[in-house]
Image 1 (cartoon, rainbow, N blue to C red):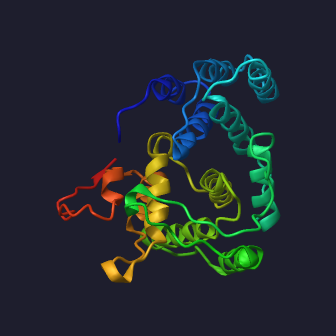
Image 2: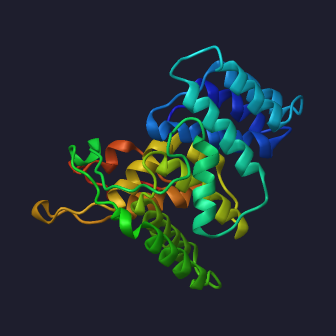
Length: 280
């Protein structure tokens, strides 16, 4: 695991004692902001600690963050607001496995932050990725977004996890998650929305989640999604889910693959054969 950031050190203490469930959700919620290079404010972490300790409820935590940014502008606003909203959503037991749920998650996360919160994009676009040397993944055509998502979800409903090995399960979940992300249904916020949707889905399957994996490796999570959906025949590069599989192995079991962002870069050519996986 990468070195813990200051906020994660504080929340990790709570995750090992007392209100563990709340602390672990906050770890995920704050850590996910790193997919877009966003960092939480000290005010958010202090608010999170009061929520974990039971001093305030999630509604009060949301109110405090909203009030805080009525009169203050800085680079932490999106991270703080989205983190507390992710915490709220992941704390709820309700979940619907459909496209409307995905849209609703995006709307709740980014209302008042993105103009098109909860709305399917109506144009095509590309994104330069540093791990691809500024090349891009090809996302779904906007006219096919709804049909593609419905197809992916329908295929997942037909899949049986019964009697599957952990390796089979991880490979399947990695590919399913990759497919949902590749559609990129929204203008912004796709990775965080996909992560919340998948986490809630995995909980319906009764998987135990290692919160530290998202807290410390959410940028790797995004980069591994990029590699799972990128191919360049001229350079002999093809879609590779192995990075994402390592992430999910760590997330769903006691394995400890080293999740370094540099490993996901298309020019990384150091021999990986010597990489060791430590059993926890």
